[in-house]
Image (cartoon, rainbow, N blue to C red; front, top):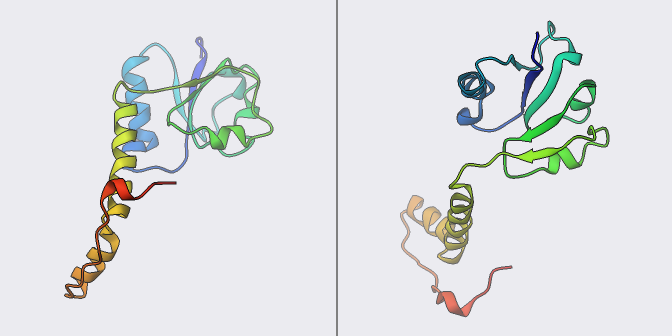
Length: 144
């Protein structure tokens, strides 16, 4: 491999986060660079200059002695920060333009589900029982 390879280490996530989908995305935007799904026994770790990761296992990145940068594909970096062998290279957060808005929507969704007692109402519906609890006004309670 002439150019440094981009290694993909994707652990967990939904079908949208599958390694194959990420590889197709990177292949499309990096046609002149090798993009490798790991593990790949044929890959020489010295050829890896870039790593795009989601929840890599501790120690996985330490094998790449020529690593120049780590691209974290998700919002959280907990898995990376917990890795005591994490290489001393720049860590870049990859984000799409609407990520903050989507995260806000996700938080609001769950706060409202809790506030409006959605799990209780869903269970009541399943049991075919109509016994709604008192619904507090939003300004009468706090979160956290």
